[in-house]
Image (cartoon, rainbow, N blue to C red; front, side):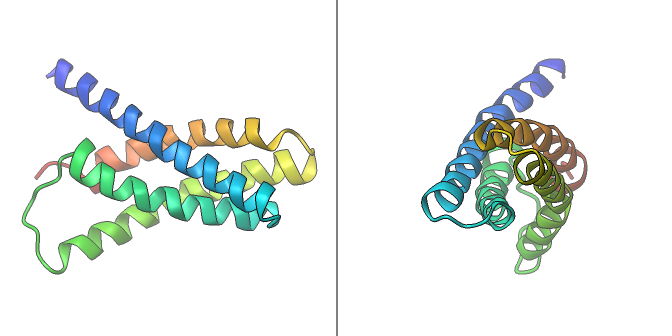
Length: 133
């Protein structure tokens, strides 16, 4: 059982790193290249990363294969977004304080914020969203 938990966490970390890449890259595009303000850039990047994370978490990380029907996917997706909303708010707060108030390096703080979100998101995904039936 211990090996299974470690393997699940390792796989989660790989796809979490990919979601972090999606988040950081899209944030950089919105903030640095398109010139959007910090907070909308964070929010848009969060949305793209969460969308990517839902599908990779559902089908690869947690291998959720319960009884699929027309209602289960939207319910899981809504639950996923709601659980991730808390970490999205955390991301916005961290980035607002670091970038908008203190003018610290936005790339470094986006990475730090993603680490904090990743820990929160793993716990939420494992316990609440994709629990094995």
